Length: 270
Image (cartoon, rainbow, N blue to C red):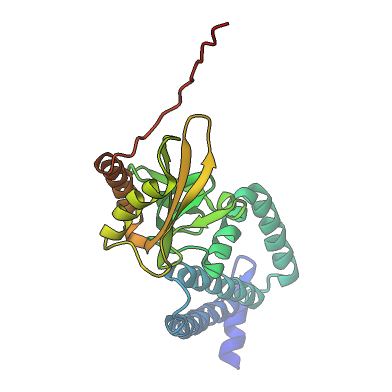
């Protein structure tokens, strides 16, 4: 006791040596406790298979900041600093910081929403915020996609959440919808047979759901036919372009005239 009393009599400025030693010991204890807690949290997050790596890192960072904030208040109490004033100061500083970075915070919380709801994942082909491409990464502030011509676009997460999201990779199957036009002079069954000839010859087109070919509309100069076939998701674009080419060849082979917009003028003699 006498030794502790003698330490308290020694002061550095307004702080006693005993208070400084006590604060140092408290700091070391807090350091050890924080390290143990972070290891426990990290291990617990490692077992959460549905939580992405970015989300795990964010949760770990939040826990670390919260623990150190508590540690600072405890150490300040050991040094005799009024903790009520410190808490008030931290609150004011936090409010000022949140007002200055509210746009960043908006993107941050939007990023957390994306990570928790999983509207898409890395590698999905999506249309979001007016942009179309393959998702490259989902960060806390930005979602990055690669367009079909390999342009990297970073979209603020708040824009992602505020727009409709079309995820073309969500299901294993996808329907290819095509429109083809033929002259009015061509019989309907003849045109449909020419189209089905191409559909049945392509092994990538699935039998179930069954392919669908029908007369769709009467246009000004042509009759429009609709083709709907189901394929595996990765085959979508290959089948789309193949149908465009092969149907044209089938029409030529079967004598189906592919008409174009034109105007017929009839001269009536009186």
